Image (cartoon, rainbow, N blue to C red; front, side, top):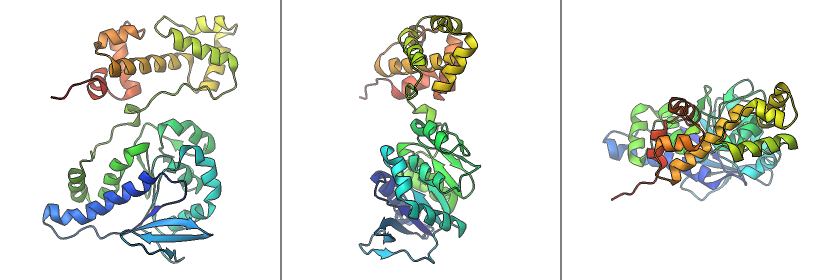
Amino acid sequence: MRIAVLNYEDAVSTCVTGPADILISAARMYPFLTGKPHQMELELDFIKPSEGQLWKNTFGTSDQNVVNNDEVYNLVIIPAMRFNKIDFVIEKEARLIEWIKQQHKRGADVASICIGAFMLAATGLLDGKKATTNAMFASQFRSMFPSIGMEEDKIIVDQGHIYSCGGAFSFTTFMIYIIEKFYGHEVAVATSKMLMINMHQQPQSTFSIFQFQYNHGDELIKKAQLFIEQNFREMISVEKLAGQYNMSNRNFVRRFEQATANTPLEYLQRVRIEAAKKLFENTNEGIEQVAFGCGYEDMGFFRKIFKRHVSMTPREYQKKYGHYEFN
């Protein structure tokens, strides 16, 4: 099997070397761990654009060679780019983007890591399909590629020969998924155990941090947002907010949602849940104390809303991210 990992100038280095290390480690260690013959035949090349050409460097060698036009890989992996270089990379790496399209046309599977999904989307291969990326950049992705269904709650989205994964180090779980896809369940389990990588994915919402959306030009709605963020412990209604800013309920909700992508009540819940997460992370308060401190009087409703946004119960979140001493 031949795998190409792109190594363009503004790629995040960990997303280049990390997947390669996982794949190579699995290939080398599988016979040793299982006592079975080698089942992971693997050739891995790093592909780097330079001087108007695409160059390949095979893992474990120092030789660089121009990529032959006739070469076809079984899988092309697109690593994340630096978050402030998205537009720049898409414009600069037009040759690489065209090469990805041609590889897929000739039979290669294509996989993106984190915001590498922007480069994958720029190929047009995702048009009419679904994808995921780092949840922090989901809104930007939707704006740039409206024909692609963005599922930022997913860590892995498999569209059949085109794959994408979520943010940061989710590529570790993603590589186990890829190994299972190409080499089978037994090899994936052995790799998971060997490298201590969890095979089971949780939604990205488990790890997400709510971003307070201020990158819009509606100053009145910014004031409403600030009011919610400063007074979220109190009873807040749409009627109260709309009246405070001299608007009808309908007009206020429309403007708020247009600016923030949330209704006012959704925004209030997100602010409250983010505050609850901080309390679970930084204090030893009980679940009821946290709920009441964040404006909830109904514990059942708090648990329901918390799990909807975080994909974990309050107790599970507290155990995962709270303060614990290890003896």
